[in-house]
Length: 222
Image: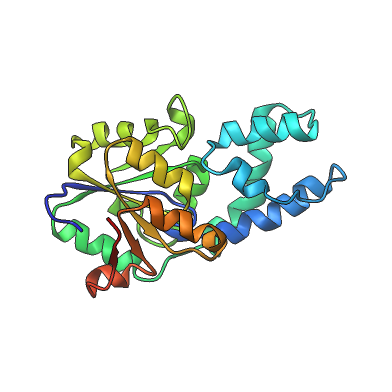
């Protein structure tokens, strides 16, 4: 999987960190303030959107009067303690990051989340120093499935798409990596199990945990 690769780029939520559960709780609380239940399929509707794009979607769909900046500020406030104290890396992720550093492979985060929450989770788990670049989808023209964030991260790392491996957990992210011309490894996440067939059809590799890579038990799908 890592042959001829000079860089590895990770999505954060559901890929590097076990954090999707945070947003289920926040969606319930936040929309409840406005008298809404969480609609079926909401996560699929916003999958891959940047933090700003998601705020715009909520504002329009649910008639929220707050500005986009106010919405994002509130989401950061609601999620910060959980990202700083409760969100943990996926099994084997920390050891895999150390292995990449030892091999001289450059690393980046390319996430739809906010920089504030990304840094909170990386710092609290002692892995922030393992990344050469942290990029959010708010810093590029379009969120996933557009390739913008992955292409921008590769440019920052000084590598070509062909030299880059992406880790993702959901179809929109996998499509973004593939559209950037990169190989993509899908990471199993409970929140995306209902999309497993599509995930496996899109990705180049599939792992249940990062231990699979070190144990050479990952699946090569294409």
